[in-house]
Length: 406
Image 1 (tube, one colour):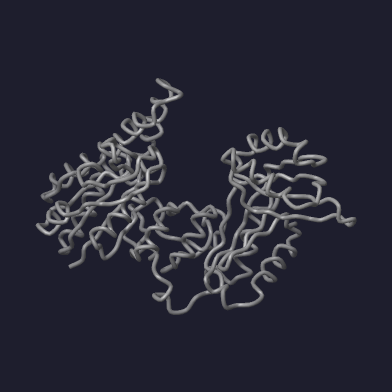
Image 2 (tube, rainbow, N blue to C red; image 1 turned 180 degrees about the vertical axis):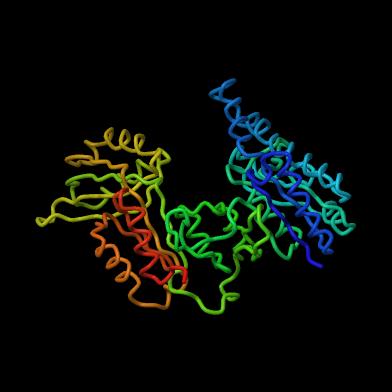
């Protein structure tokens, strides 16, 4: 017998038939003798609908009331799922965030989990009752409903799994696992049986949308074994585990991309101490995150071109901010480009293998793909390229690192 947390996303509970399908899947685990807690998202599209209602009523809204409204989507799904389980003979009850209670800080709409009190819920699990928990929500120090931000149900599930000492947390979604690349683009992509926490965290932060980044961080911190599975098939998924559980690491485990990037270049910035601090300081003060950075010093050593990337939605704001301080920073021209894509390779095997960068850059060069910016970490290399080369680059890199399906 195991203790399991099963999390079902919005597409998995998108209508009554799918909720009944979820109930049947949960029943199979109960019949196998397992203790089961379920975490559900709102029905697909429901959070967007509730968000829209709030913004129509009050564009500059009270964040506390916003959370009260948008958290209701998960409340409905939790109740319906508990009812569906009861209808097929499974003892079940719904739990809202405040009933568990799942305690958070007071950062409404982006709350952080501080503590989960599981004494009562754990006792019910021991008695054989399924706990159907509303994801995405908790209760703040002022006893107001809080939400964890978009994708927060994944975080709720992993946190609950850690709190109740679950043997595994299964994340059910509309894909059947983690692939070596987006199979919609790279037809030779393979589903991975296992992937490390670190690799999954890099993939999630670099554009892969299988798991939410915060949930992977929490799983890694608490060593919660996570399995990504499909709600619509019984095939085994991909386990996200500690590196020690994977016998032999490939050099590169996956290739991913993000279209949510934009590039800014400041031409002929004066090359003296403090200029870069001024540029990135004023962006930070205006809540613009900077990612990849490259600096090219002119031949005379007096000026430099400073190139960096920001999130595409932040591009206009970043340009306005930098134009406002042009005199203070002292650059000749500002050039922006939103037609760029960040392509990345990820693999813990890169730590002990030489020549990864050479293989990557050679594969792109053979396809005449120009690299605009490069950034690296211990287990990933990212490059910025023109948007029109995205598919070509992904396929070339997938083949270059022997990831193609046999």
